[in-house]
Length: 495
Image 1 (spheres, rainbow, N blue to C red):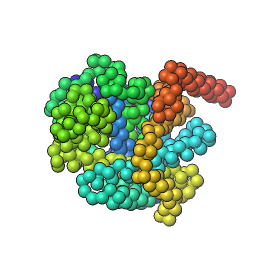
Image 2: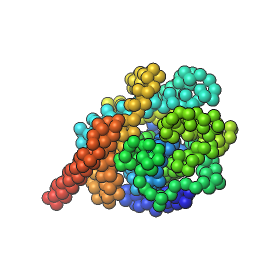
Image 3: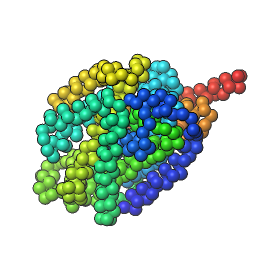
Image 4: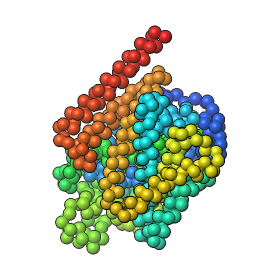
């Protein structure tokens, strides 16, 4: 429990101290922002700062800092270190610098910024890759909330239809009409959930594993977890630590800010808030799986079913099941409904924002003006068509889509590595301290290459070969970067 409290304090300190370091490195000023310079009352419109924060927080959160943190905590107390250090020095820096670069380029999206700083080939790859990711996320976040809501009231397909209609509205309507009004309310419900669970957790004062008890792979020793801690932990916990998905969402808010000085509370602050969400659920997971908390919170019939199942704890109690049991046990009926609505709101809003992002990616890629409603609807039609096809396939093959979804976790970390590299190139060109993003860029490069090689869901190559190959690729990437810097310095000298 001490580790949890120290981790919360560290995140607040990280925002106050390292957040200011990142702000100083980037150097926000009083120049006119895209929301003012390109105001169109559709995508470019000034919103109040508190609304922008709430929208950004909900856009980047989804269920990632909940389910990902629960599964990441299966590795043991090392999850605390990744959430805290990853969030402060990696994820929050990633979100802040990429969001500010987007603001300096009229709210350009992640794919277009990749092209500006890493080349045309990288841009083409990222346009395709991010479009695929956005539609996958949007489709996935239709069906999962529908399942949860149908358990409270109504039919599953009714909720599927309503959620998809909501996605249509958030994709084509001006950002202040739906997103600007509804998202802050949903964000409050999610924050209520986290605060309520955090208060219960602290009041119970359970005896929990601490980081000084050992940073090894506790899951392999006690839960039958098959994956190795490195690199699986750093992909399992993405939202709450480092997530490239955030770089696709930040441009929406970069188009709504009236001052560059709002960047630290909006981009860095929203990421730190997400880190707190991840910490709460990682701690609950430690309590549930390593402190025998499941015996205290599970009804007798669930305990009997588990004992008769012959399955391990993590096979029987998946992340959504843990969420339902904890909320029901700790918060009662009314509290659990509010908490579940917060959990439902996160994927619904993230899914809606993903479809809107897909529209914006297409508009930027093909230079299509989005001022008229007709152009927004026409550009959204192919996005919705693919989303509906994926949704229909998911409903008919739920386990098959679950397999595909495992690649999304790796995909978001691959996007993080790319984003950190173009942020590094930007800082070099601006003669700023590029080490701020270079170090996490190198680390995430190693993680995504290693995971691609070693994971059972991808190439499943031998561990030693995967580690060595990932190290070689990472070193080669660093060497290419150093060569580019030398050439750039020589060109500056000649000029």
